[in-house]
Length: 99
Image 1 (cartoon, helix red, strand yellow):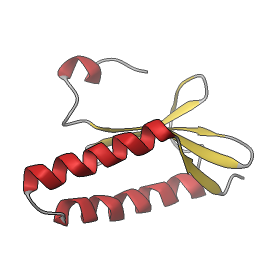
Image 2: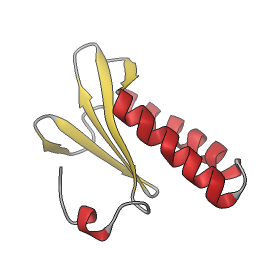
Image 3: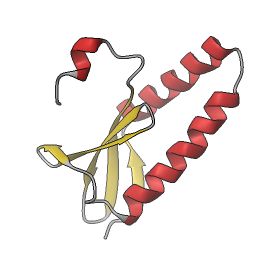
């Protein structure tokens, strides 16, 4: 079972831009800190149960939590997070599409 969690550069950029967005919008880092805590808890679930979440395409799995979507791939030695989306920042057209 894979134990390492690896973030793709794209997912890291999406996470950073989400944190920056909420810090600026709220003029505080309180929500970002809560988000990081929540994200760590959810990633721990992925680590423990990597196949618990539905496969949406070509081995890509999708975890939905709070207002966020994490897409990830499971390999023998690692879990690769490839996308992180804040659904409140996405347009309504995206919400109806699958990846």
